[in-house]
Image 1 (cartoon, rainbow, N blue to C red):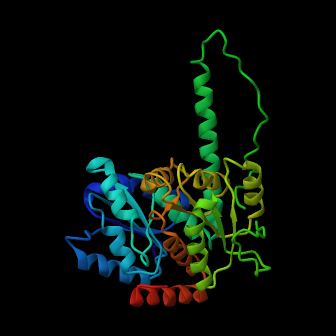
Image 2: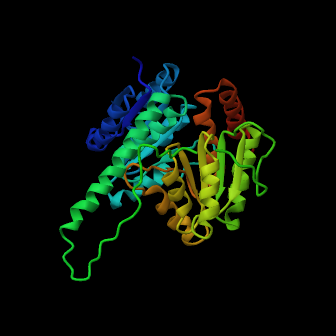
Length: 349
């Protein structure tokens, strides 16, 4: 049984975070391996592990590291497989590790999850593998239902503590989680859409506002250049929740989502609420240098990870999408590698 996920730790002290990931991968029944290798102290070891693991069929790498946290970036430099970064809190609340992981240059995308969120890193890795593995998708659905029941039980525990004279309990329609389907189907859009594809597209691109259009267009230009089919829409889940929900409901057959938003960046959170498929988030620089959007995207609660890219990094979002799709398609993998090679050689696209 060959591992499908390779976990690299920058230090043995990061193992407590790795344990969270291991528990998820065991539940998902995904084979994995784990190694300790420092990007700075054992650079050659990292390169050897990554290159050999890529050849041997590893589909997703996880880099778990604190401090300057260059480990995920070094992994990305040596593989065409997707890399998930889990920044670890050692100093500065983990912000140093998070920024080092997420702010990658064009051509080397790294999907960053929240600080110390080993479980979300593994869930994201499972979502990626689940694109081409039905059993993993079923396991993800079961985990999603477990999270639903946990919230329900937490609410029940609070009832005994509600002793106020004016507390009035109301009843709401029961949600049947057995029939709940968080996965989603395709809708043609006239906004910034590639509508030449009659078959279900691979990617849904959602921008939260026209102020995000520049980043969204760069994303779709990259998808076009790699011949990846997509559909896209500008819609806010806050200003137009009905239109947003309708689009999500109709996007059932896509393989992954790219959500682009500035400010409070509710778009990514709204998308992950509707789907178990991978969600790539691109924060936009509208206010505060984009830090508000970045922190809103990356710091998701357990169970609902967002594969967060750097601020305004629409190009890397498209490249990461290509890495995911390339796992199950030699054609898309070759398109991605050729395009990435041209970027690295010329510095242009």
